[in-house]
Image 1 (tube, rainbow, N blue to C red):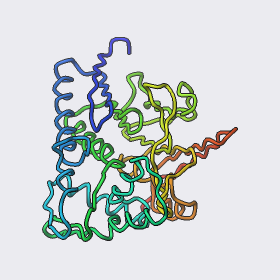
Image 2 (cartoon, helix red, strand yellow):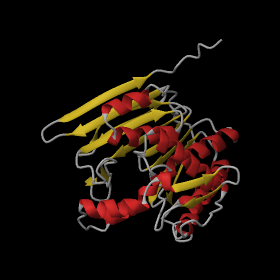
Image 3 (spheres, helix red, strand yellow):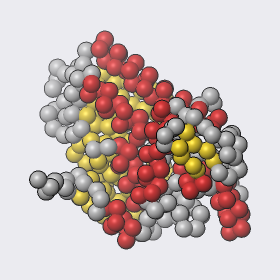
Image 4 (cartoon, rainbow, N blue to C red):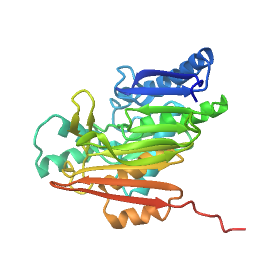
Length: 313
C-alpha cells in the first residue's frame, strides 16, 4: 500500500466542492481522467444547474405557458427520470415545486392562502411530456423546474460508466460527502469505508457503509457547514402542507445507482412509514440509515433490503 500512487484533485461543481481520488494511477493518465471528469460535469452543469448563469434550465424556466421546449439529451433524460420518481413517490418528490421553494427562500412568512396561490404554478401534472418528439411544455404560467435533488447523482451515475469504460478500478468522487461514488476497493484491499457524520458533532461518525462499486447519498433537513464547523438548516418542504419540515433528520442510502439512492434518501426524509413500505417492496440491494436528532437523544434506524432473486426461470 505504501507504494501506491494516489492522485487527488478538487473542482467546484453545482455550487459545491467535488473531491476526486484516483489510487494506483500514474500522474499523466490521472490528469487525463480528471479532464474527462471535468468535461462530463461541465456538460451536465450547463444543462441542468441553476448555479450556471448560462445554463439551459434558466432559459427553460423563463418559457411561457404552452410553448413547446426541445431540450438537450441530458436535460430530457433527467427530466423523464424525475417524472418516474414523481410517480413512484405519489407526487411527494416534484422538481416543479421550484416556485414554492423560491418563495420560502425569500425569508417571508407564507400563509395557507399564499401557499395555495403559488402551488397553482407547481406540479408535474401541469407539465406535458411528448415522448415521441422528446419535448415538453408548461400548462400553467410562471412554472419552473429545479433538479437540485438529483443533478449530482445523475452526474455520478454517468461518471461511473465513463470510468469503467476507461478501465479505472478504484476511485472516490465526493460532493461534500452528500453524494459519493466509491468505485472498486480501497488501496488497502478492502471496501471503501464511508462514514455518516453526526451533524451536531461533525468529527463523530454514527454509521459506516462498506462500499464497493456503489454510491452513498445523504439527504437531510440539516447538514454540516464545513466553513462554520456546525450544522445548518436545509429547506425541505412537506408535500402535504407545503411548509418547511422542522424536525432535524438525515437519511443516508447505499445503492448501485446514485439516482436511486437520491430518490430513496429524499423520499425517506418526508414520506410516512406506510408509503415507505410500499416503495421498499420495489427495492433491491439497498441499505438505508436514518438519524433523527431529538432534543436530548439521537434516534437511528438501519434497514438492509436484500438483493431480490429472480425466480422466473
